[in-house]
Length: 233
Picture 1 (cartoon, rainbow, N blue to C red):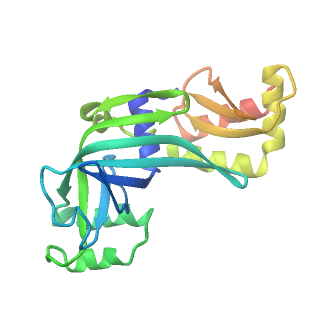
Picture 2 (cartoon, rainbow, N blue to C red):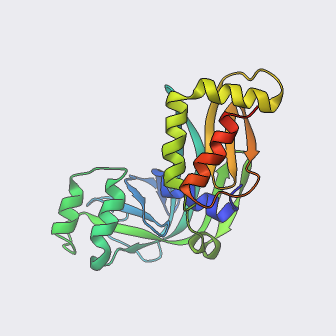
């Protein structure tokens, strides 16, 4: 299994902003996550964070979801706690791209074109203090150094592509391979997580982990390791 800081950062990289609170009060939430794992927010005039107070305590709830057929399930829930700060103008375009990946709001153009104007939408980000996480059966808290010091799984992009392909086109093969591994007929089987250390399979309502004999060090190694599970005998 991925180390917890890396696993949490991997989830954050694909997560969407679900809810936002400012000094404990709910506020409108639109945003994404930048390359360092910091939530980035698009804030409109009239919203609590628009006239930024540097001491405002902000909590951003992120959700990473998994689509299995017609159903959507939460992979991980993260609450990033910290303090809002203005995105520097030199980084505003990158911040807007991070927001647009999850919320294609036309006011992003306004925020860039009228950057710094008092009446324009603003781009803010979190100065991270700590991250509370709930993923699978694990929960806990990461301090800012552990969270920001980690990086997402380098094979995550390939893993998500392969996982989607297997769930869309090779579930019968996956079910047969998992059944052979378990020594009994498996129920409804989906590939749930895939990383360089192994695969997690959802069988009915249970999650079962199948570690690789050795960690995968490349995209090809990851696909070869998964093929071993699909074709196990």
